[in-house]
Image 1 (cartoon, rainbow, N blue to C red):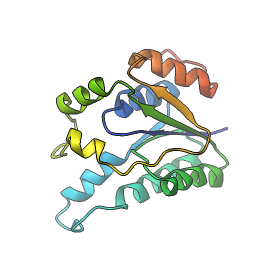
Image 2: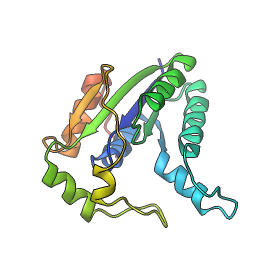
Image 3: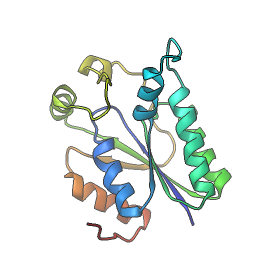
Image 4: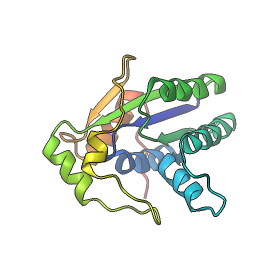
Length: 174
């Protein structure tokens, strides 16, 4: 059965760090909302403000790939019940398993350091400041989901833990 891994969390919690090796290990399509939103912003025809454009494109790309029978790792902040439900609906409509995974960094000093010292691989992408991250509208999750604290799990361990929790056999890749 195909699966949609919905990797979510505030900026600086390790989404990209974990999403890439998860996609590589599973042979899954990797969909990153930040990349899509920046591509939209970079267009000379870009709207004044990019609000939900990136999520809509990411969800449609995920749906197309799930329909082809491909697993998808979708990475986004996914801050509200509305976006979380939309991702679950994408999986349900495709007959795929939805794995909701929230990344947190419970060590505030570590989280702040990550946010303030990281770089981006997306051209012209403006990373959020610590104030942006702490002031972000991010609703708690009332639904059951997997929580991974990246302040206590090294990236390789976190990937292995997620694969174990979703019941995926780990595949050795070069």
